[in-house]
Amino acid sequence: MMRAAMAGVLLLLLGVQKQEVVFRNVVWGMEPAQVLAVETAQLIKESPGRLFYRGEEEGYPAIIVYSFVENKLIQATCIFQCEGTVSTSDLIKDLEHKLTRKFGQPEIVKANYKAVWGTSSTHISLNLTDEQKVVLNYLSSQLAKEFAGKWKSSM
Picture: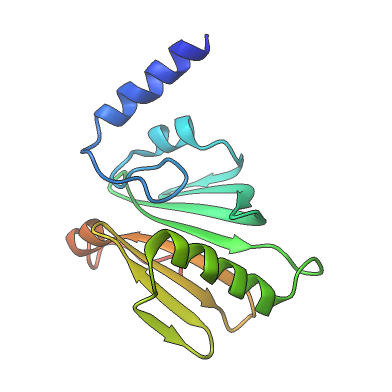
């Protein structure tokens, strides 16, 4: 049974052009059904162009939002839900440390807080919103250019 499920996921992934996996076993350009097949967090809402999950990222509880344009995965966003368990500054420090280990030194760091990393296929940002929410955002560099003007970032 497990082998059949793994084979199904593998077949789904073969239909998407080969790219590096940067976030939670998803690949840019996946269709919503493909993300539903590989994401293990609890699905809490489906809406046109978006899938919402409750899960954990980098060891912290988060709402995870996948955004699609023309049925292609273009963005993944984590909104951390740590109020009362860890301070915002400690959360940012820990996430920045973990992301730096994965992706190297950030290209941009701003005091009020934003840090940006990049890979060959992905723009990654860690932000503190005006509402004091810590948000980690992954964006397909290629698809963001391809669909410029056709989508609105969840950030």
